[in-house]
Length: 84
Length: 151
Image (cartoon, rainbow over all chains, first blue to last red; front, side):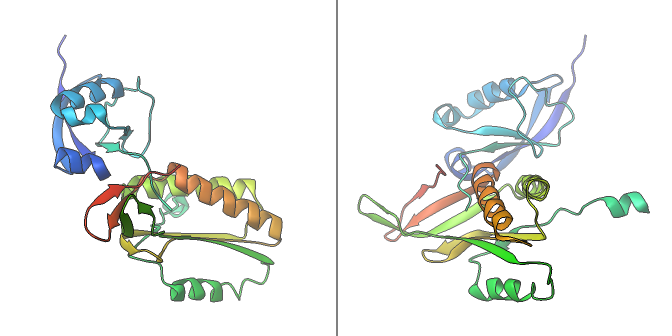
């Protein structure tokens, strides 16, 4: 069976962008990748993420860790909220 | 086309910099023609000059995932209208730097009667704090910063 990679924009917000040094990048993920697997591969790519608290938004929602990201346009790593 | 007309356009709650008292006053004045309203409730969030150790916060620089925040705000708005007897509701949040003492959040709800206005205002503010992906960099007076986190 052959899996295809999809290129997805990954955005980093707030202190995450500060620690990683970039606001966004384009990365390839294989078909069937879950939110949990995204977390793992981003932690390998950016070790600073290991000690930081964040949630992963898929487009404009916050799915469970087991959700598959296929078909999304964008991922966003969100540190703790501070609105208001 | 009827389907296009039905699509609610996402409102943008964000404005650059502090929310001015003039904007708030104008918003109040705009409701004087809506005579079914008997009660307004307004919440204003103000940037506090917190002291952390020897540093004092001079401003908060706000950033946000604006598409997601506006989408989530639309959900909060729909929830508020279904839970409370509201006539209308307006929300503004700052982006960029707001100095200590400046207004960074303006929530304005209106209803025929006070109880719904009180309840809706609290509901909306609490949900904004918890659910909107907004980030605040607290800038210290003598340089340096820390990232704010809602409790």
